[in-house]
Length: 233
Image 1 (cartoon, rainbow, N blue to C red):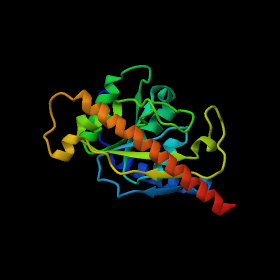
Image 2 (spheres, helix red, strand yellow):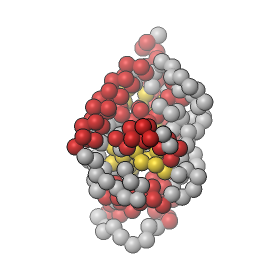
Image 3 (cartoon, rainbow, N blue to C red):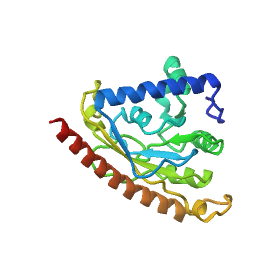
């Protein structure tokens, strides 16, 4: 995928993604007994999927949340190897420079959403430690406002044990995922026509709501994980 513009996936890329998603879904269920609970039905595409981020396997776990074709932001360093870069592009990935504001990546993300493709963005920006979700990047709220799409918050519990930060191997265990209710920008809820400057107050409001929801969902996912472990004991 050219980073300067969004290119809709070809039929082969759609086929490849669908097959890969099914394999990943089965792998997650077999390796970590992954369970997913939805507080309500997922909205129709396009939407922004915003998971918590504690492990490198969180991207894999998204494959258990939805079968909708997704577009992913991935750190630019992963695209150095041509073979890996091609694989990532087949899976809907495009590079983003985490060292600063990457206008090209933001434009691709916005264009993908406008074209009807849902997008995965980790609002914490990078993997974090601990149970508290805080200091979110504002990019998710900005994109939701610009593209006029909802944000679907996702809490993940157990991935930090399955593959801790710095680990080279994955470990078996139990992972629970809690998918929250969609968060809509005010302009979408009131039926306003998109356009004009994105309001800073609305970006802050959406980011605050997302922060609270991710903390709540991660706690609920942890509760579900404990219950799963108890049934296995």
